[in-house]
Length: 288
Image 1 (spheres, rainbow, N blue to C red):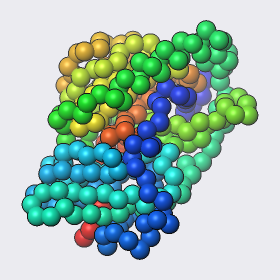
Image 2 (spheres, helix red, strand yellow):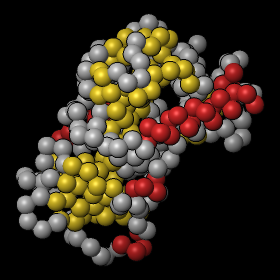
Image 3 (cartoon, rainbow, N blue to C red):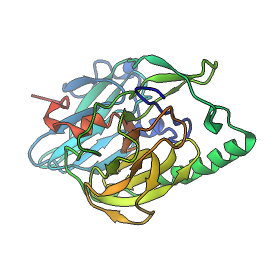
Image 4 (cartoon, one colour):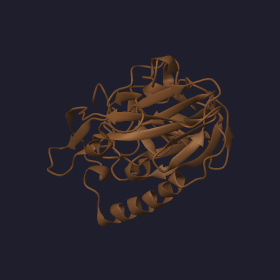
């Protein structure tokens, strides 16, 4: 068993990069608003101005969170300049986010003799059904926010989260690498894992690659995901409160040992969940 267990979830999380509406750097250089900030894929930028009511980026628009706009940058976003705006008292204000090239490194992962290491045709058909189920989550209508930042920890005490963004290569197989879109927490088997905020459970079942998984919709386009449970404690359709137990940590699915995988997707973007568990004042900001 690995000292620092790992997991990997190919395909299931899908891709919504196009929905973020990137604009090529060359087309934006020297144009638009003067306010500009740099960011890496998988991170967040905020714009906090009193009276802010609405935010937009690309084709997406959403309500401000406590008079602050948060712009999540998808993990797979290529270098680009993204035009963003905020609305409130007075005219619409615009700014630009320059997304830089970045690499979170690579790691070789050795999987044991488990079905997820060498999926059969039946396993792949099952995974296709899983992807269709998860795909419906990304098209849910964004309701009012049921959370504030920072989010609550999924466990207490919470060890350091690791692995976000890393390109993992499984058993040295060419073409087996993918980007890990969550953070892994080395919790003991049987430990409880809790909801990071109030929300509605939209998936609570055993999926091929994620194992026993829970997806929670927190409103405002924020979805949190918890994978590899040994046992589920909630069911789809159930409302949960921040800190409520969702399941018991285990090692189901594609893993090397017991741990909790926590992922978040906000307005379609896969971002590092650790950023939402920390003081939001640490998030890079647009303007002074």
